[in-house]
Figure 1 (cartoon, rainbow, N blue to C red):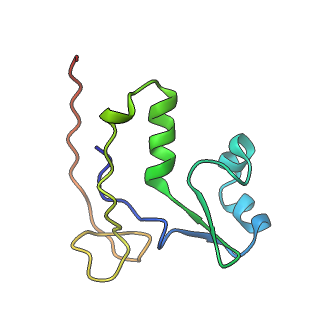
Figure 2 (tube, helix red, strand yellow):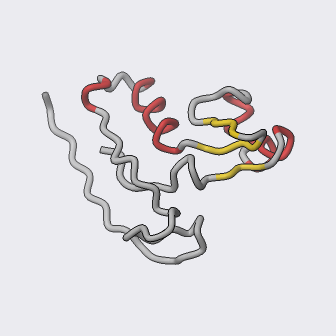
Figure 3 (tube, rainbow, N blue to C red):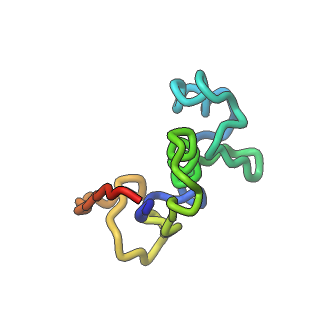
Length: 101
């Protein structure tokens, strides 16, 4: 389960590819400008964190049926969650469990 995160609607990287590469240099070094989670909208680069996490989990051989994203953006107005991206500090609690199938 991929919980609420800042979504691709609000996670702006930069106005240009050059600035996006500076902001997320390690990511761009590994994946390039068309990497998992990179969304281009109106010539601006955004990051889809749940898509990038899903890609990492699939690379680790998790079955797609075992990966579920809530797709709730924590930075959108009127969200019930905190978001540092939106300038609102807070903390989440997380519980992670692994079980054999």
